[in-house]
Amino acid sequence: MTEDRVALSRRGSIIGVTGNAALAVLKVLTGFFTGSMAILADGVDSTTDILTSVITWISTSVSNKPPDAQHPYGHERADAVASKIVSMVIFFAGAQLAVSSIQKLFSGGSSVENIALVILVAAISSAAKYFLYRYKLGIGKKIDSSVFIADATNMKLDIVISLSVLGGSIFVGITGLQIVDSIVGLAVSALVIKTSIEVFWETNYELMDGLKPGDDIYRVVFDSIERVQGVQNPHKVRVRKMGYKYL
Image (tube, helix red, strand yellow):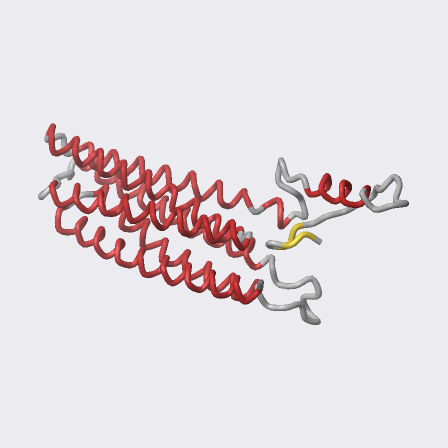
């Protein structure tokens, strides 16, 4: 199982880094050459995804290490710690995008050229991000990795972001209202910040030795115990989650 986790996490991280790197370069260059704040914001978001994929790769490598003298319970909580780091990276990127969008919005400097290129790149990004979301979510559920699921949640937001950029760019192309591009950029930054807070909060349960609402591990344990002949009144069970394991 450990070998499968290592192989799956390595392959998923490599695909995540490669895919996001290609999208980041494409969108950032498009943003610079067209002046679109929305596609540039989307590109910066993809750039942070490269870092989160690298963090995911490193954390899963650490979490798969066996217990040792310093870590008798194992290293599985590296996933939860990495999820916190991922959330902070996402928050910083969102805050930077918000500041840039507000500055451009109030300076009246919105001017987008070659809107057709922006629309094409946003459409490509939407399709690619959907693939990455489904792929990383599948791996996260298969190996029960909180950091992979957190990364997939970020990818899910990226789909919404790219679709928002696509819709906003089409609107700008039809109406000629350039200010909409900066408004979309600001909306994108707000979504990024919201996701960072959700990812940060999600891992609190594990790090605080709690269980998420709806986790029925206690029922599973007691039902299993009560099926053993001669056992009566099982009680005082304490369970904590360590990565993909319950202790």
